[in-house]
Image (cartoon, rainbow over all chains, first blue to last red; front, top):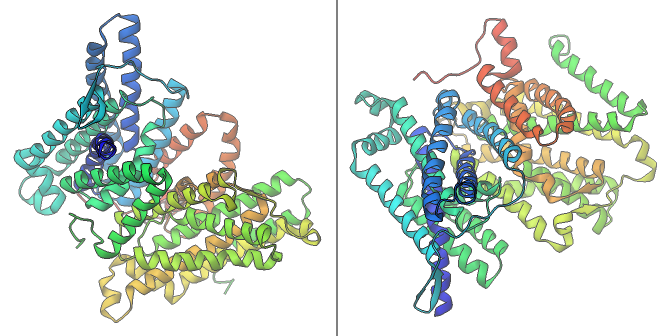
Length: 294
Length: 311
């Protein structure tokens, strides 16, 4: 029982980061109909910024750990937003709804940005100091307070995004554009501006995931790439462009990874995810909550 | 036929010259570069072949690897003769691709792109976890028979060039026209009673078989293969060749592969800056020359081959 609770806790903790990452990817797909292979670089950028600002804040400036973390978190979000804006204006703007063109553009960006990170930061993994010390015990399973907070923050952000997409005017335009871009434009929705907002929200979500992940794992310049393959599997399972689908898919993949990794081994778990995708494709090609392509 | 198609005649001449170079040049490094150019051209052309039906097939990299590993297993574990080991590669790649295509080609666009990407990574994971395939360090010891050793580079170039011409012929045939029709609007071929899914699978199997054979050739050329040689990045580079050369014509990926392979040899000396250069080249070409080098030629002639979203 304790073991299962522990594994379930693990699932929720990995899953919450997966969900954030995959949500950004699925949102960008939904609005712009592009697959952004450079999504991991947003994640990496945020994690790298958090780690260097923390070292600077705690080491050089003598700030308290949690204050430098909050500072680092918002700085990371701002910088990633800026990177996203530049990348959109000079790149993706010209490849809206062009799957192949945007794919190769995002690959070019991936190479360019990852190479730049490597030169700026070097290949040595860095860990940041624990922001919130302490351990909580729940039904016999123990969990560091830091990981619990990570889950809560991720859940709040996810909820915030859900409200944004389903309860606000911007969310309505995002959904309208995702459903039928031409009809949305006929209704007076400025497609390009909405696409920009969608892209920036997606990039910010990846940045949140990166900034949160930096607290529990050593940061390297390729940290985001490991998430990419799984995020793709998640959004195929959930249905491309579906917010709820990404949440379900993210938790499902985390569940398989956590339990499969414990009872068998991590690579068996990864193979199991792939088998799941294949089976799902045979039964329901558009994903659990996706819409069939017209 | 050659008179009416001077470009094809030129290509045959270039291929013959490359075979001659592989036979008579004493410099093993440059011969190796020529083989790389042709192998990369095959990767790019097979990627573009599946683009004919409108699908971006990252699994090109996986089938290249499946071909290479099949030949390696046949040659070193089963110790089959050279020709049979080599031919096992396209057979294996063809069979697996038929199965994979049968399952996945019911999806299209982004779903197919992502599933082919996941497949490539999973196949690579499978190599690293398989003891009999050498795990992470891969397999060694694929040598052509002693009698053929001196001629092997020429044989490799001949096979690779033959694949390119065969794919060109396939694209120009009626079958190739049907593939393009499927890309334009698959409901129309379906409306005249064609089995669109079957034809898509056929297109996919042709491309995968071709790239599988190239993988077998790669196995003997390198004598060493490892899982890290067959990441999705192989397909990414192939797509870069296609985009930079231009996807409007089969010559585009070949030109792109040639230029980037040669530039890549030069870029190796830049260490960590290598990827930045590749990234910058890809982004630059994409933004400044949509349609690639082939598209540039067409633009001078006043034809526009580039499609831009009207919105």
